[in-house]
Length: 423
Ligand SMILES: Cc1ncc(COP(=O)(O)O)c(C=O)c1O
Image (spheres, rainbow, N blue to C red):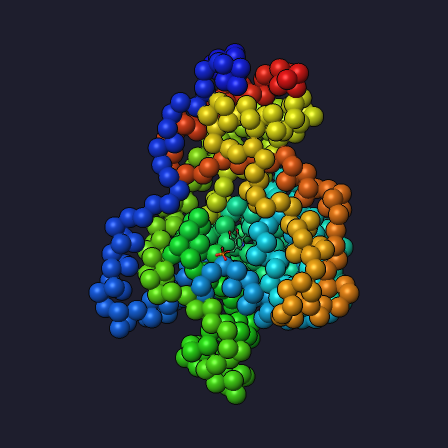
């Protein structure tokens, strides 16, 4: 039974148990993989080929191409999908900016769509309304490892020229209807950056079953490897230079990521267990809505534990609730959303930043309509998720007592919401 006085009012903290775990875990396995490369530097680049083969097998895709980061994979994917001046790419606002900015770098127009209020993933009905004959691609993000509704998105693109790109940067090992995400759409993009469930600190990988999309991704970013990797002679006249961009992954990062991939299933199982328990605990509390998963989806990667607080149902402002939770010892951060930079459709790069100020690159010549600036109120569901969400520092395998105490802390704060609203 939680103490009746809130910690913010001088009562005892509810969460006293240490989390007893951390997010980034480097084991002997990672060390041995990296050391093997350092001991035999002449074979370092073989790590790229090995990782690509192992990753392709892991997600069930014909091809995987490693890159220096997840942003590069999204650039290559959006480019390969045919984004160009005059084309549109539909993308959610509830995502990281890297799902969106490559659209501009291809000269195409980002068209923002709404999110589902409970799963936080792109809302298929809203996406369908935004499809035009200019739509080249749809990008969906599996937010924090929670798969988007892939049946609905496949239904929208099947039989059309529109390419479906999965930003699976949080969702390593997640599945949709028994298939690994990243291979359900036309291209799957994965960040392998330091905070991610599989990491080489800084690297990324794109997966696809489509030979043509694979070759276009190679041509954009893999100079020096194109002749070895390509399957057809389609772009043979570009030799090994391609379009001259080098998005190649670092072999040491690949060696580390290979070790991480071996531990992924075990880590996902550990995270899934405590996520499910916390869903049970929080799901029964008035006005607290843990992020929901579609029936055909199994979460993987599980980057962050998150959900929303309904201030009206609970009877106190979200800010006050988050501050009270922090005082109880819950590792959430008031005012900083998981996408701490803000609501993506309101960011200057996608609204009114004057690219002419930069003076270089293709942006200064953007014609009208390349951006379709939105204002607050234009995507009310996405904005509400942003304004009401909470998220926890997310360990892999915390002590069970910690999980119970986090649940208790939410219950205590909601039960005392009346006092928070008066304050
Ligand atoms: C959803 C999403 N997409 C893409 C990226 C970009 O990945 P990277 O930082 O490896 O470039 C991130 C990074 O956090 C992300 O969260």
